[in-house]
Length: 263
Ligand code: 5RP
Image (cartoon, rainbow, N blue to C red; front, side, top):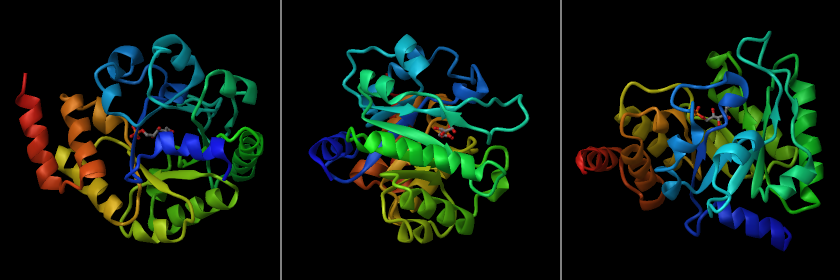
């Protein structure tokens, strides 16, 4: 790995080998998602606890302070919407020139394996890897399932994650599932856990994050379960304790309860 690539990777992933990415890219197909209507206001109290921000170039330019020192992972695939015929028909949205101009530390591309658009979205990933490698910019692949949430089993996610790594992704973001070690065990690059729809309780989130990390995930890319929580800062800090300080779910919950009541 060249110096620039190593340097960018080390900005995203701490000395402990762990990371907490904060995604706010949902609007790229969902429009003004609940709690992300004004992304700048949502992230202001959370950014100090994020290891990177996952965001589109439009929201980055309009809502994020360019003085921030938080590394940026630029969402560079899209062009579909929740009200359209399907989410899978994605294209690349952002040129390498703009990626560099925005000083991105990495980029993120979704792939929809097992769909009609498998070939097209895997080509999107390969093209982005080809463009970014020359500039030392890591590509994070996102194993997306669109509306087919039932697809998120270990067999499918392990297959999808491995394919992304084979095509040159430096990091793979995939959903949590049981036997997560089968995903990390078959994927030669670091794996981060995606959030998915909101859980019923904080403890549920803490338990899947803890289990995923025990089973080889290097961290999380969690959005709605953080910024839709009534106490997002407490939630983020408690999850951070699991990722970076080895807290167990009950310890993280205790921390959450203490922080949410603090002034
Ligand atoms: C959308 C994404 C999001 O970054 C991802 O879904 C994480 O957010 P959440 O925790 O809210 O699911 O890649 O395609």
